[in-house]
Amino acid sequence: MKVVVLGAGLMGKEVARDLIASESVEKVYLADVAVEMVETFISTLNTDKIEAVQLDAHCDEDLREVLAKGNVAINALFYEFNERVAKAAIATGVHAVDLGGHIGGVTEKILQLTEEAKAAGVTIIPDLGVAPGMINILAGYGTTKLDSVESIKLFVGGIPTEPKPPLDYTRVFSLDGVFDHYTEPSKAIQKGKLTEVESLTGVEPIYFDEFGVLEAFYTSGGISTLYKTFPNLKTLEYKTIRYKGHAEKFKLLADLGFLDKENIVQAEGRDVGVREVVREALKKKLDLGNNIDAVLLRVIIAGEKSEEQITYEYEMVVKKNTEVGVTAMARATACTISVVAQMIGSSVIKERGVFAPEVVVPGEAYIAEMAKRGVVIKETSHRSAMIVKW
Image: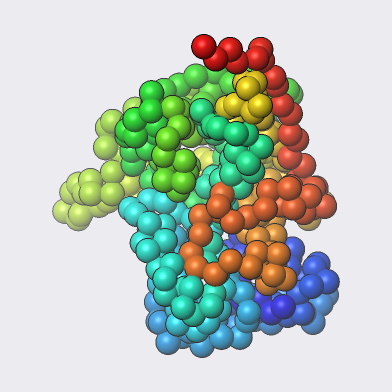
């Protein structure tokens, strides 16, 4: 298969690195507006399977021309481009996946393109990062093991292994993305009813070996499509994992309006965006540098099987690959989207249309492929007493 990767940022580069290691991938086209940067990266790979391509993602004609080079496209651009890329992929007859961005209804708009995608004979799967993405696949897989599902609880966080005050956090992806997830409301199903909860609230303790007691709290985006796929649950919640005290500190910033896109103030006679100033100031404070990051994940699915209450739990802890300098977040994210793209290209996934990850990605095969890449997801199950029906 030939794969086009749109965007040569951190994620795009790691996706390309995974693709060229696959025997089933014949050619990789890595496209970005900064083609010189792409060529510099390619020169470090010692392979002729990858080619740099110039791309202006704001131009639909340019997008279609680049997409037409491959059988499958992996969109690693910022999520404001997701709908545009999906439409261009359908117009070109190319399968496409993206890293998600469930802010502002982006994914909902892509899902509405399913009839067009089906007519074009292509498969589009949005939201294929870690959260959303990996958690959707695992949640979907866990539900297939039960006769009925009562609750799905999701916990994910990217954190430094050696936290430094005052925020005990390091930047492993776009701070604009972090701010969006901290300020937009989070969807949840509570007591069987779909609701919205305020992000940075609902703080609860969560324990992981080696890391001890951390905290988890509501943030937006992680629920993704799950509330539509499983609308009859009693409980569906997504929470982000951080070191204790993180939510309170960022809640203060949010309450003061420091994370608000619309907050404009005058300073020395000029209009200044407060969020932009905070973002640039925090970039320096939160730079990962040579420090080691980790991604922690726990997905808990509870329900009934053969008149027993059963809980399936999926847990992952992955750390930065210090040998090649790849962050844990980049490893988990890039491997997820690369694995699913290759599943489409090799016809493991044959369905045509637009699909949420939990609906169409085979969980057992996904877990096996991730393990080959050193991203190990452990499954455990717990049984309780027999259900007595009167």
